[in-house]
Length: 428
Image 1 (tube, helix red, strand yellow):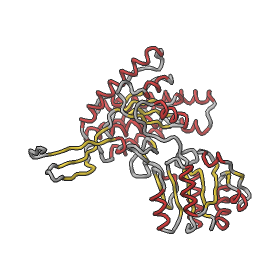
Image 2: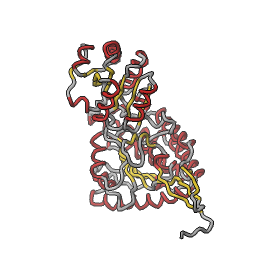
Image 3: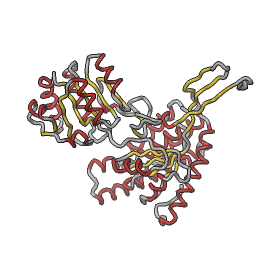
């Protein structure tokens, strides 16, 4: 893994190209290694991470000093901080990925055509995945593990705030790969804070990178989507809605809305807009508003909502388009499911949308008609997470319409090929 931490910018281009070439070679070896070898390597990576806890904690102290000097918020400092327990938790997450079914080589479908040809659609690795992320040091291990599980090599670019921690974690992961007999270069970390390294990755490194996955704030994702010359798996915003239908159970609605908004306000699955059927708004909105306020949430709503709950401030057009990632929610009274569907169609970002109702037909219509990566019925949007979906872990939530959509786990980091078996057929 190239040490670019103090490398002059004039040398960065060549270093990045070399990383790409080595990743391509490693990806071929990793794909050929087989499921058992990849499983052993993940277990070895987890063991190496546990063994490296003292070194990782020392590196993390450097990042915490830098974060304090930069004046990072308490929430950001908490994301950045590692402890023996947190690192062991990351190692256990790697063990969970090791226990997952290996997607590579699995048959998606198989059929026989009139000519007698036997045709199978089989999962294969994407190749080399570039992952650009911010702040959380654990993403280094999570992303690397998912790539290895799916037979892909990874080129990782961590945020500057967590770079020392990421370097220490990557060193441990690479030693685990080597001890299991697989190439260290299957996991490489860009060791520089120079933003030019991001540009190099977005260029595709002369064909070495097959896909880019951004994980971070809006500005990072936008830059990646705007500048990448290779396919991108990711999402720009998670503007998630909850629609409370006329047939909703009141207490269930209150519990789900409060959890969806307030459990963790800074994640992309947090609810940002509450839509309520006008026929039940007078009876239910005051109780929902009170519960949200008691939990520390501020509310901004339309005039109808303000009349029903005086604590609500007047919303502006921008509120319907805002991913707050904070203890704020916008509230709109709508004309039944038609109004909810229309609002989501106009303002939704394709991430996660939810309906609360006991009317099965209304629920099925919502789930069928809403265009989003995740659609939910009677469940908190905070469940919009690959781990909660039983996928072991995820790199992020994809909102695009090509390749992956929804939580991006190991299976979503594969593509497929067609395997055709014949018995001597020739085409007339």
